[in-house]
Length: 405
Ligand SMILES: *Cc1c(COP(=O)(O)O)cnc(C)c1O
Image (tube, rainbow, N blue to C red; front, top):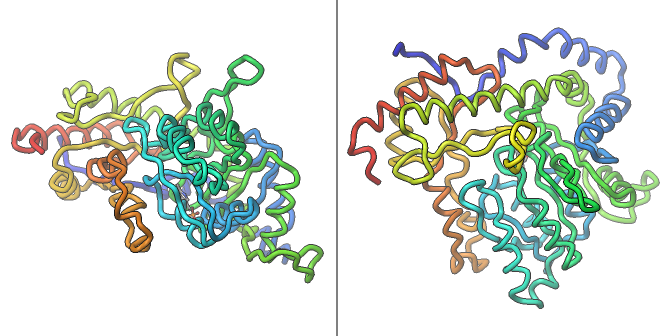
């Protein structure tokens, strides 16, 4: 097979198709002289809230600020615990620590990489005094697939702890919930009390810089977050609480409004790419549930097959692989971009040294950090590129020594 370059992500193709509209939208902001908040931000808030099926949207400066402002509004502070996953991007935990609170971790499910709802239930039942300190349950919809929200909401409701969704990687992902005895599909960020989104350029909906959004179910919490977004000033210059500058840039909002109508098409293209990888790995005998083989990522559309539990938007397509470091060097040499999300689980991060997390272990998170590798999955990837990627992985594992751990 002919050598080619396959980058992990290529934003240039998407840009080419939308460049004119994006430049026009940005120019409009510049010419308006309205550079803070204003109609572009309000329009995007309304559009994203509608897209997610949530009543309110609050534009913020990043996914990180979405988490921070939401946790502040939920009253998280020193002495509090936030129940979350140890296998996520650092921002999930960083927002908790910046408020003087501590993460209480629950291990992940090894197939979805999302927080294990059974372990979550056990953690809440284990120690009532500790559970009383848990202010928020913070699941992450990792790689674009919803955590098991039906189970998580049930347990959190039982303990009356609010659920904040870290949906930074999962805008438009959906999962089944049971409401009044029937199954309804709900989008990420519209299930818990609020959802946090990131428009970092590599997310499925990315800006031309940083940006974020909070979707919220509750009008009072929405109002609180909006006040916290502007230093806690309400009215202006009267500060009942301490907030920050968490505002979304209208230039980003203008660009994102141009891109949002394309989002479902991009999701579908990523899903098609994932299905093609799965098929190609099957064909070369490399897909399986056992770790003798790289594991292709799960499940398909609920619209096509009722048995499948979610609508995955594939922000990442992640395999478990044997001999990862050697394979990564092999792939780099073949001109293919691969990446590890994430090589160190949160409870092993150095900034937690001395907090007592050395004594705990979350085996599935630690194993995922050791074994996983993401492949290019962006919408414009061609079939030939994917065939090349799979061909190279097959070539690597054709050497039997590479199949050993
Ligand atoms: C990207 C991301 C964030 C942070 O978003 P930024 O916009 O980069 O601040 C938070 N949580 C998760 C899971 C993410 O992937």
